[in-house]
Image (cartoon, rainbow, N blue to C red; front, side, top):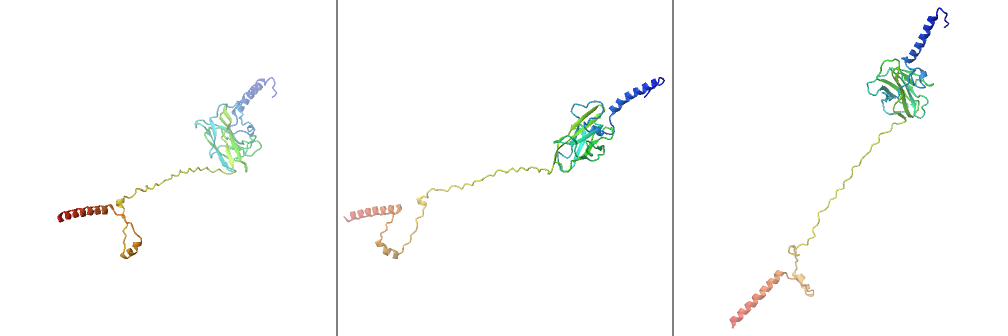
Length: 261
């Protein structure tokens, strides 16, 4: 702006205001969301560097770390301790095998808007206001027929001078089929029961308890026995009876002989 001598004071004042307001505009950032120009580095244009400490915010996988091919992954952006809040965010998904550009598409969220990054379509989500937030839920769909490991990177803005760039989520596996749980069957050891039979007594029977077989002989049968003499064993009782009869007979003969004299 050309200035004459009369307007020197006014020209100097305008130039000073331009120099003052330019950095103020830069440090305010974008309360209505990150522009596509921020996609490459995911860094807000706040004129300051991001925090080097661990991020107090996290991108949580609400449906677990495995999803079917062409399925939907539900995310939640939230503080780790439930206390902190964030005003702005920018989130994208990346293939772990090729992290050169964001992949997949996001569904239009309630508290945010989708933008196009790196020649893609609807592959990033950012905020629409600078109000404090404690939870933002997003739905992301992988590319058609994609299978592999995916991570989400989110830049969280707590205020104009405090933000964390590319906070990573856990990896989610996009698979063709959910693996079934392995069931381990434990076989109970078989118990073998052995039944031992009571020992059979082999003690020989007493002679006195054994019954001698009874034999019946007809007189007719004895007729032919003369040619076949049979030896019969006398029992001890019969032998004692015969001995007694012998002595009684001997004594009787002695007495009779004495009388006859």
